[in-house]
Image (cartoon, rainbow, N blue to C red):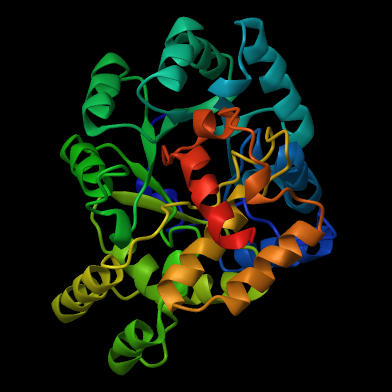
Length: 374
């Protein structure tokens, strides 16, 4: 059964940044968001084995599977290379995922974060591609693909080697279109030329493109005063041909309602608006920023419990808004919750090994410590 892109919702619910209360996912809050999303006629839920330390998959069971008929929703999850030590781990993790989600099969299943080097080598070494196709033959997976964080060259190599992949999930947003590390534009063009359905992650770049300096927000508001800043980022991606579903890691009901409105009343960017987005991007990228998307892959294994994305958020805010009080207050609140300071980093390298953005985290933390831990 091949994928019918027209049957997929344009907005996908990413369950990577769910609302929490005292460090625990707020089930009632998630249920209300699920209800709003489903009532809007949308039904694609994206989770992963590692999101929220495994609790994201559990939320699928509690907020969705127990409350809606199985044929009314689509669930996607992922196999993480960095949790695999042997071929036996593939089935162990897959079984655990089915149990967590309360499902008998997954509609979409992905190899998580395929990229040049360790992750790609692990999937090849442990025959994960062949294993996934066997799961598909058994009816445990309906559609198989992979998420990608590597180079354009490696993407083409992977597509050539694995034509069995039915879809690819990539990071794409207007800020990263020409990013020399992410290379959204080049990845998009490769997939579009091959007519491969695309699922897009990080369309708002971890929330970065929902909060811009006031002078940049004013440029958008002058053209479309009723639209939110986040909607511009979503409309940029939604205007691209070949995009099947756009994931948003929503953590608040207000975000859900805004995104639903954007896609139920979708308006592709006009030529004038495209030019404005390009102008805003050019101005925005003149300010150096740490390219962290707050995926938090780095935090679970940090022996010093440093909330690395929050450290970088503080630094980026200081640089972007040219003020220190609020970022330092935010950082102090993070530390008061039991997280380590930037200066506590012991340079073990665990974080750099799992960072999809390939950030030099150790050096960045050292620089951050000099500015925050004084």
